Length: 333
Image (tube, rainbow, N blue to C red; front, top):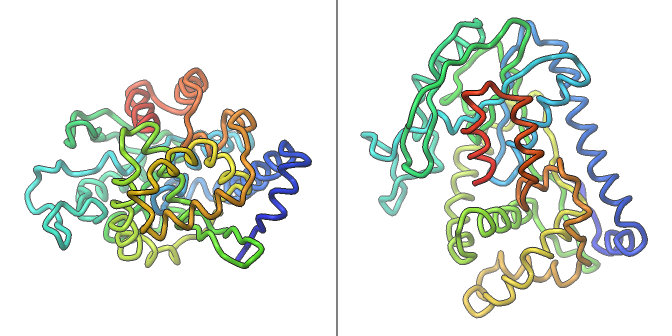
């Protein structure tokens, strides 16, 4: 279990924040590159890559960056697909329900299991099929696009349930990867900012900035998200062939610049929430790092925003024309 001390972070932020950023990004890149090297060796026998991790782990950014590395460093083409494509419409019969009678959006049974498993086999065999596209505004399947894995290429599939055998089945043609925040922050009194809370901070940034959600609702919904993780995601991480830590040493200091004022203004509403108090405590300790220090292609951009021109360039490189609109929509949500 890895810890990073806040005193050390503040010292580096004061002396050389650019080095802190570069070292953090470099460590993350090395993890991805090492995994991509192993994947490329098995491209003929394991053409499907399954990436799982809890909400806020950086699955989407990691999948896209791995696709870029595979092409650049290993001359291996790949397509990135989100398991969100295979969501069932909210009006589908027999949708799973939580203890309050609401649709359990964390359940793997929200996925069209039969169709997904059929398509996984076709991906392995390199045969064409019509892949569904999910409309998040309408919460329903909107269309289908043709898809075919070309010879010697890979398909990278990311989603919270990608390692759950109920969802992706038992197969011998997939490489399994589990990604999440694995490192903890520790202050001088040995108080901890847990990886789960760091992922919550990521969600607070992304959902308040780009999804129109207020802080109170994000905190409230996080309880349900956490229960879903414990029940549906964590029990299957042992199936991973590789694990990747997406923690960036400087990231909480960046999020402070986006969230500290908003959180302070919500004190009267949230002061009894232990997650809130834990976050405020560490924001009070850590020095801020400017957004300007964050590279345009950093994983952190998934949570604080990307440059649109870069986003368009990346997707024209990674995706067939039919999938460009869908995937830009997902990342900009």
